[in-house]
Length: 220
Length: 197
Image (cartoon, rainbow over all chains, first blue to last red; front, top):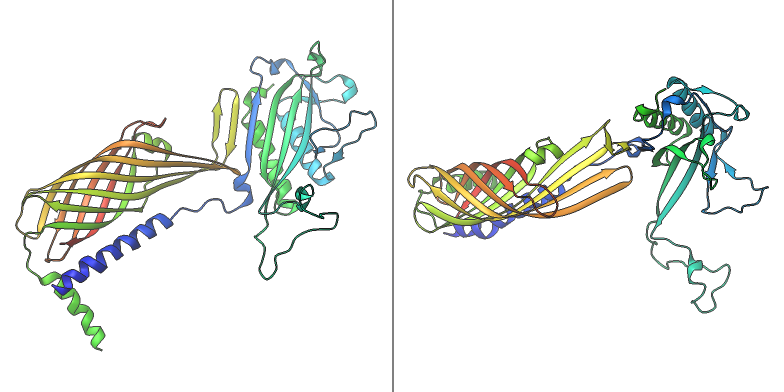
């Protein structure tokens, strides 16, 4: 009788608890490598006749977008992506366009298509924010102030840095009456900004190739 | 040395007791899930990540009423696929998860009341909460759907002892469309330890 009670009162609930815990905690793992987080998005104007276009051009450098608005003055010069990454981006666009049957021409030669490559970088910070946010409220708060955590460690500052390459294929000959340029194809690549230069350039090439591969309608 | 002898003695004691009419049984099962139908369209990979706990109370020698709760996780990594909707195409590695939590009441019929091996059939009804998650890139989409469900089962209860036994069961879970998710189904294979009270 004691044994039966022991089984019912101790072993049975214990077994339920152990198996339930193991089952719920046994969650399959996610990505292990940076490139597993790379995604490629493309979209296009399906009424546009890509087949009738023959020539294209790309700029010599790739711009880096770091603010939402920029001053509209003529002397403005943006930041540019470092040459090794720009090279990877431009080379991949050129070779894919050539494979599709397009011929690269100079900008002055009136190309049918202009592809504009740009790079965004986003930082998302968790558990940390700039103390300056409290400047308006905190008594005596001023430049040079900050905070510290006496006797214990602050929350972990973890950061997800993602990079986005955006390619806009424009048609300079079909400018609208209100000076708007049609973007007939867009390719967006997003991934973590981690890893060394070699792996990053390799990921850039792979994902740009994918953007063109999944857009067979661009074929000339 | 005493301890070493104690363990087999304890196990012997568990299994030697005479089989008598039991009042209730609690079973704890390891559960394997094999997705079918719409579930298989989403994840077509069987999973061994699951458990089911069941409690049954006998209302007479053949029929037991009870309840079941459980949890199982289906998972699949989808690679090298382009997802197209209209003119937009999206490529990337997709991690798909579906966690299901059945909460059901059941009735079981035991054809034979004597002997160690007792085959049974059971029907359960209740709800299953399905939590679907898709991870792609740094993005994640997760939704929980509560669906009404039925679950027939065929199985065998093996009770060599008065206190403890085993069971093997094959179940078919069918939940019906609800919460913007179509009906889900899977086969559940259960192997469990049974505590007889």
